[in-house]
Length: 183
View (cartoon, rainbow, N blue to C red):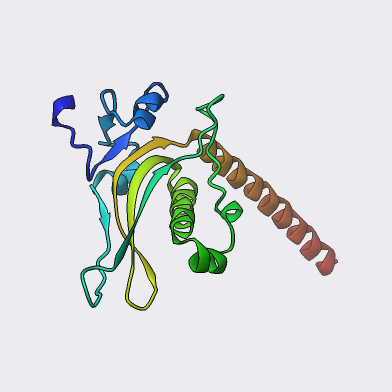
């Protein structure tokens, strides 16, 4: 099965013991993502992400981003902090540093995926293009490596429990207020 893996245009699930392989660019131990959980079937059905734009010549000026997650090397299993706000303001980056602007967009995608699907993107190759009018477009992502984000799942469950307790307290207060109002 491992010899059937294609490194381009695929999503890979990475275990903690395989982290070094991901960052060294090899996928000897990495398995193609088949299923993380029944609720995340979306992630099992794509091999790449692509957008097409129209430009006067070709597809515009390419901007390549080789994204590597900011993993804490002393504690690799720690939840990844995709702090896109620390990269600067979008307007300044668009004017002065398009590559950093594109990297910020990748951080935003990773943050969104980690919060919504409890999956952390560890590494991927992304291609953006700047069209004739100066607009930057996300075009393509490949070689996407992910891992389950158990901390985010625990945080989400804790937040749900906290909200349930608040709702229960509000419900009890409302019933008490209604009873006092009747009396």
